[in-house]
Length: 139
Ligand code: GAL
Image (tube, rainbow, N blue to C red; front, side, top):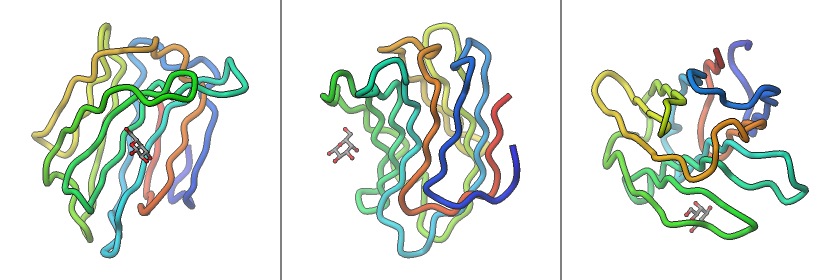
C-alpha cells in the first residue's frame, strides 16, 4: 500500500489477519498530540467488534490495548509506558502469531496481546486521531 496517508485512514483486509500477517506502520506523533488509535475491526456484523484497539495516549504516557464485543469494551491492557513521545517518529509491527498479536515498537519494545477474538475476523483497519502516517503496509 502507498506512502503517506491522510488520517483518518481506512483500508479493508479482505482475507482477515491470517496467522503470519504483518502490519507495518511508520509515523510521527505530532507535537500537540493527545491520542491516536489503530483499530482492527470485524465486519461480519453491522455493529463491528474491535478485534484489536491499540491506543497510544500521549496524555497518559501509556498505550491502552483492548477489544470491543457487542458494543462493550473489554478489560484494558496498559503497555509501553513512555514509548510513544510527542514530536517523535515511530515504527510499529503488528504480527498475527498463533496465540497472540505480537506488537513491536522500534528496536527493543514488544508486547504479546493474547487473542480474545480470532485475528481472522479482522477485515478492516482504521487509523485515526493525532498521528501522521508515513507508511502503512500489510504483508
Ligand atoms: C475508553 C475510551 C475509548 C477506548 C477505550 C479502551 O475510555 O473512551 O476511546 O480507548 O477506553 O478501553
